[in-house]
Amino acid sequence: MDVRFVEREPVERRCLMSWEQKHECALPEDLKDFYLTTDGFTLTWSTKLESQPVPLGSMVINRLAKLLPLSQSAIFSLPNMPTLADLDTQEEPQESDGAPEVPHFDERSRILELDPCGGNGKVCLVYRNCTQDQEAQDSEVWFLDRALYWHYLSSSFTAYYRLMITHLGLPEWQYNFTPYGPSPQAKQWACLYRPLTSHSDPHVDPNGEPILNRLDPSKAFRGKVKPPQPKKKSPAQTGGGGGIPKARLSGTRR
Image 1 (cartoon, one colour):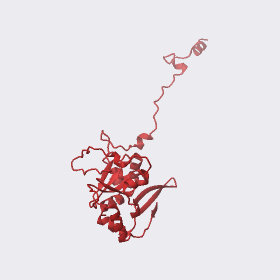
Image 2 (image 1 turned 30 degrees about the vertical axis):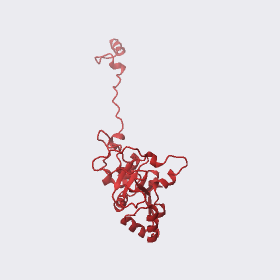
Image 3 (image 1 turned 90 degrees about the vertical axis):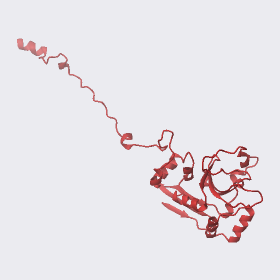
Image 4 (image 1 turned 180 degrees about the horizontal axis):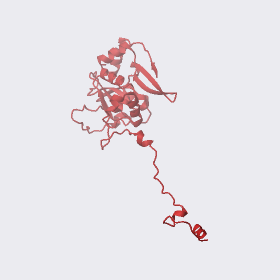
């Protein structure tokens, strides 16, 4: 296993203050302490498959300079393209009991990208119920999947950081907090490196069976047993009775 960690210098306090004034957001204290220790976090690890290295785990917290509003990300800044605010409907979505209100792409929320997730979505620091020209205070961590649906992760950066470490940065681990879960391939990696937690997967099909395929080696590799074929009777037995052949009978008469 090959583990690589990128060391970075801490962020100066004046840079944090300048960032908060520019984006009109008060960073949570635990995230401030994090940036005062290191300017972002990047740890990747790979495994070997048939003696070939395979990149697998990735844990990323963007540098302060890349902690930008989601609308300014390069993937969403193409010319003549609809904005993310166009995806917000006028009707408020119906939330389940106890579920927090879903963030909005317009001025009601301020969304900052924490982790690009390798193109499988985005982990974001979200400030909800914002007011224009006023500094946003309370933040949460949400996951935006590739279909642009929101999924709640944690109420603080520290809680999210622990989740990231616990899941080892495995591919699509954030999809464990969605109704549909990660892909079958990602589940197989999780079963290999996190067997205790992956066996309690809540994502099941309507019949109550796990989505991950189950393979019984005793049945899959068991050879087929051919039914025994009936033995062919010899010509001497077709006459029945077990008598003596006619040629021998004629010889004895002589």
